[in-house]
Image 1 (cartoon, rainbow, N blue to C red):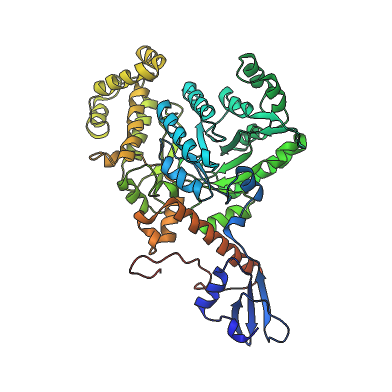
Image 2: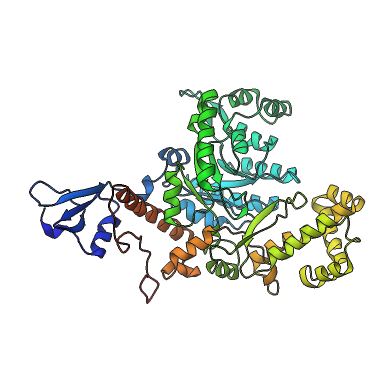
Length: 526
């Protein structure tokens, strides 16, 4: 090796670090610090200060996750409800080697059926893995049942189970319906994979253990699974993977990832002492994943894979309006707020949404306070009633109730009957009309309703915007879901090497230690 092969300038050192397929040696030479991809040999006159191995993005995270799901990367695009994580997004991400989940939550059965049919035709027939979201629907169990029916009908091999606070017969039915005897060491083959998204250890434990015997027995009695499948269920955990969800968009407990993820990993290891098969359950990370550094941090905490959410809502393929994507592109770290959730409004459950550019969090919060403090629509103070009709609902309350009653008569007749008897429940149904419509207005970009758009969003969006500022990805039109994943993973591989060097005592100038995104057209990346 000659001295010419060592790079001392910032661009040269960065280029050596960014060559992820080759090792990087940091060398000292008479007070200068340089980098080379070629191993120094005796007589070169260099002192090796530190070295890092090749670090390709497709080697980040768990090899078991990649192998089990048949994907190239330990990276998942999580489901965004209402079909925002649409077929186009899932197809693009899946073809690029990621596990992508279709956002089935909140969609009618016919829409889910159409989507799964297309995904099966485009991806399933080609052997490309994908997933479908299965959301817990305690207020509407028929919706959960219909989603499982559709997944079974279209031979969907993986579901992303989210928002579950207890196990349900239909979730267990999906898992058990794919169990078969196998001549291999485990004795069982699970065709139906479950990736459970949780934010509490007690919920994680439900998925780390085998399905409860009372649920499996009831399913056998109803003829929905076989006795053999119920027997096999005793030997496998309910989930293949547990996604620990920290401070995310939508439903979230806003738990710090650094606290929650290690706790669930320790829980997994404890349960495995009782149920050995649980040792193979992988624990991943979601919530706050919007920069390469966040990916590296999650992996360092023990995550087997990472799941992105908010940043994909800004992707060109996401089925939300261009105006919403522009709002998301302008979000900062502090531009999120908590607001009442439509599906669990009466319980006071909240979701994290974008606050910048919309009045939805304030309007939704007002609705919940009125619901909490009053027993019926008739009991609302006249001033509050006028405010709702003129500023929030923009319609007479009686008109909103008539539309709501018509909808309930078709989709949830039992709810309509209850609302006719219970004035407070009727008030909840009217207020939930606004919450449900607010998310639809955002998806369609409803003109005149910009101030009421409900946009699910976590702080990862602001971090992503700060990271991509001045680059090509600052432009919403260039935020393809595959480009987002590519740069997050390549940036993570780059920063993993930088982190190793720092731990070895090497302090690189900032110009060398920052992953460089492509420059905006006509400009230079700052």
